[in-house]
Length: 185
Image (cartoon, rainbow, N blue to C red; front, side, top):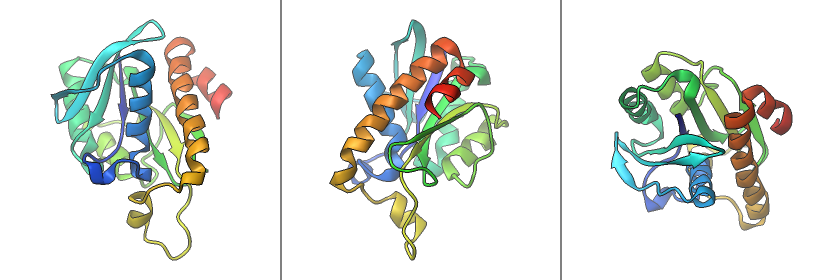
């Protein structure tokens, strides 16, 4: 069983923000595979289903970004999941909007949600899909940038990004992270 988490912040005021790119990808997976991510458990919303023949748990932590690890640790513990069966999708300001970068493991790279997950799991050896949201403009505060919304002219790029993220998840589940890196990076 795979645990697939998308990071973001709960609440209507954060819907559609750059920081909620992970939630957006989980919503896209849920739509494509008819998985309801509406069960409140483990400090998050979860949904059980099947993607590419693999049983999955889709997770949207409701702890706010900086405490995402609390939810992930509880889900991983409850389902007795191995870190090799965990995948996280999150926003990355170093990539153009809608672009992906897949990694088999790595540091937090300054991302507080990933930092929290590393702290709570005690490891950085988990798969990740970084979802580009664009670099902040000069003079902008980082928090203001990631909590801001995308301009409407970027919606086609974001739609493509969500579709590619879903295909990358499928590839990771069927062919492994290396194959997905070769195909989608």
